[in-house]
Image 1 (cartoon, helix red, strand yellow):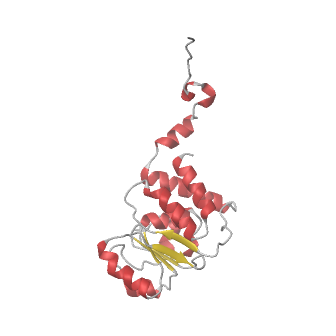
Image 2 (cartoon, one colour):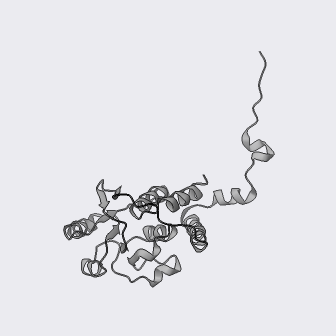
Image 3 (cartoon, one colour):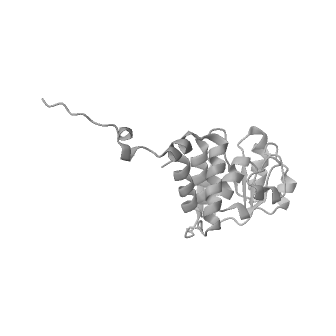
Length: 195
């Protein structure tokens, strides 16, 4: 019986990742997200990320298992988590952000957005005054009553867990779906995962 030798893809010179791709693959966490966001911003500056064709309704299941449905893409978003704020800017929805926490400080454009609340323990009066048509919050027990009150006022509220780097791709897709920016979100996911 003839013995076959299989050369691993990484052993073939033409299949080895470039030194730049190897370095990019070793970058993780917040730095990688910031680099991806920079690339997305660069793409936007060059005319890259446009809205998707608008479906009849935009929806996503949040991290509490609630389905959030929007009749139209949001035009005023309050984002009460630095990670969701960064993702919104990365997918081209940064101009829609009308409220943030004091910790949402990147990209630099986020600093121009008014602070409306801490991320935990919602300041409902300030949030409502921003007239959002979507609020993004962390699913903390300290936020439960605030989320219920916002929803009772008819303000769609999406609870997004942002504890792990694995959450980045899932949230990018969800936010892309809710903001009709699925294509830029998909691109961000591919860049982030190296795919």
